[in-house]
Length: 460
Image (cartoon, rainbow, N blue to C red; front, side, top):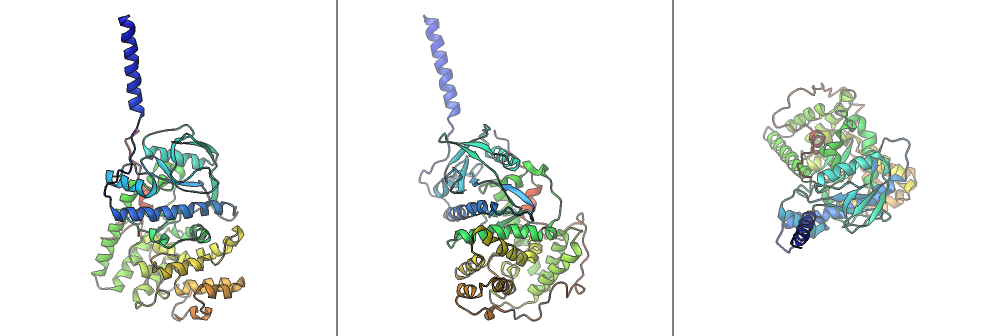
């Protein structure tokens, strides 16, 4: 009898032990004081994700045969995994996000809701959120439907969507003004979402990002990447907005950009800044299209450096943001007007308003949120007006732009010529990719850094 009782006691102890091992505690909001700036940035991030994800799903209906394609999901996730304890509480308070993969944006018919926690991906489950993200990336890019299980026990079948290449993603909450423009992905500052963005304006942003990749990709390619990067930081950063490693990488990128700007400013003014930016842009452009596009970038930089500070509309995007973006972003700006045309030509096919670009421009301008590519400069606005005229939307555009006649926005900078007209004036020699960078120079931005950075995690 005693042996039997001993066996029962042993079994009970094993059961209790296993039960204790399986019950994982996740961060909850205990009411403590948190970083209010981080909290505000997290809420902006949430606004952006809730606006962009349905727009990304809408863009899949385009089925454009003329673009390169990639896979997307009908939802986006975030995680506070590896963040400091106080910051994890801020994530919960702002977005219901804890250490697990948490839905922060979802299309209405995705079967998932904001706040849902993903605990299994086609039967795969790990406590390490980075490993879960790597698995999710693998499933997404496989392109086939797969089941996910939420913490509430709900099982949802997810079908990846094929869209035009160019991920539209948001800045990390610790560096809310960071932005970067790459042929694979664009990162936008969180301040873009401080005014309320309409569904059509979010769709414009997504299509514009895809257009920048498609129209400007040949200019921006500095290296050739393959699917072998599936386990890198970049790959999972295309899924999650709460990645701590990406946030830290963004901090480094921002600090380097600030140091480069300070060093250049100390030299003598606009000419030194233009020269340094030219060198960075030249190193960032592939040999195949290097000379042609480096000339174009060089001309724009030289003009910006020599131009007196004027109105917002007269200042180009690069003049507004200064040296706070990567050298690759300088190159990308040469395709901004092409991205405008790409989005304008396609948004109507999806039932959206072709003037959404103008309403977004005016909304951000009214909010004095101008350091982003969605506020047109004078040249881009003139080209946009030409598109409106071609599609009989001239009067509607004038109404959007505070009722002014479109003639107000005619290009007045007579000295601005096309890159082809000035192609012989500023020839650049391509620097070797192996050549050492000038002191203080920044080689690429956050996206480029993530492509080279392996994901390090020892958890399970």
